[in-house]
Amino acid sequence: MAVQSPVARHQVREEIQRRILSGESQPGERLTQQSLAKELGVAQGTVRESLLELQWLGLVESIDRLGVFVGKLDAARLSESYQVREFLEALAVRLACDHASRADIAELRRLADHTWELSQQQKWDEAGAADRAFHLHIINLSHNKILIRLTEGYRTLGMAVRALRDPRIIHEEHLRIVDAIERNQPDEAERLARSHVAEARKNIERQAARNEFTARWVVDTKE
Image (tube, rainbow, N blue to C red; front, side, top):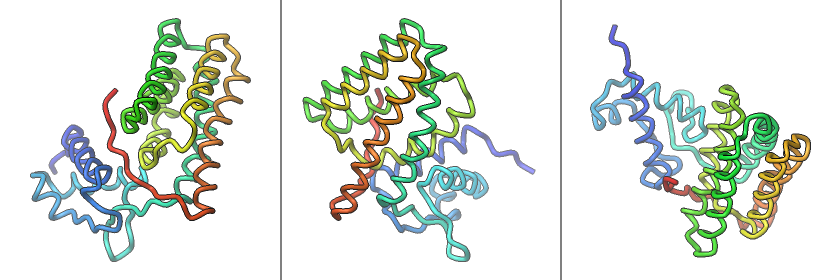
């Protein structure tokens, strides 16, 4: 029995994810293993494993006897992802207090400032990427491999919405979180991180209540 290459599976997953995030594959579109395998030049088993990973990330959904479809993202699903994010990032920032070096603190400040600068230039996709890099750096500073893995799902869903808050307030909150990490104040860092994520969730819920929320996949820009 042939063993699937982890590299091939990763490449297939990344390509299908790219199509979804770019809008090339639309919500509700059926994804067939046979056609994708033929198009991408891989075994159907490789496509099947890739789709399972994307289902775990919330990008696709499987419906019994009908097949696999591009996920239909809405405010309720995003709100759920932010609820999880609130607790996981609170833990991450608490653990980061034990591991952050001076270089890490400097990098976090650079990313916070860069996010602010890009937002001032109205480069929203780039600002979103810088914001995600800021949060990802904190998550990696937790040095907790399980926590890092668990964050993948909500980070991918987070690419479906741009910041809905005043960039100045976001910048100030980022810097306060960094200050708390630098001073090794885990309780304060956790409180600030939870509040930061909760406010983003509340904004989504307020927009949804006014029927003003529209999810839009944001193409990632490498930092």
